[in-house]
Image (cartoon, rainbow, N blue to C red; front, side, top):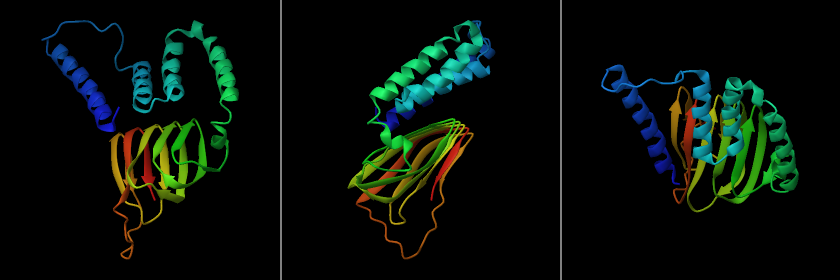
Length: 219
């Protein structure tokens, strides 16, 4: 699904919930909520759902949802062992695909970075960089793209930062557009503007996504 459609759906959900609660508080609608909608468990479930929906990354979103459910139903804690076992099996079978994640430098045309309760400094090398995804949950990464060359046209890099952040280091001649939704957070372009820098308008990097209680920057 395109980024604009994702933002429309997510924004519509928040607007709908807000309107329903306003009508309930005004007495227009009469119904009882069986749980505290403003509890941290509900917030964690919403955040987990947003991460899965926005990025397709199941594991980071599932962590938030699992923490909420295990607090409500502590007797289900053995499922953590099941999840760890499945994660070990998956990691072994998919080792070649994810091998670059354990290295500080790697080659790929698309970024796929997930930082959950951690992070690091990664250097990417590509002669045809086509964007990708970056997820930061209670952690963050510094992604160095100075050894990359943008593919022609507009390339999209989608960011989701929840209680975390990501920093992108890009070449000074790159044409970077920022279209990030920030809620209790921020994302900014902190590159130094050199008067002699000529931007290549035939290639651009568009950074989109969601920052929730987090942040990030381009430098």
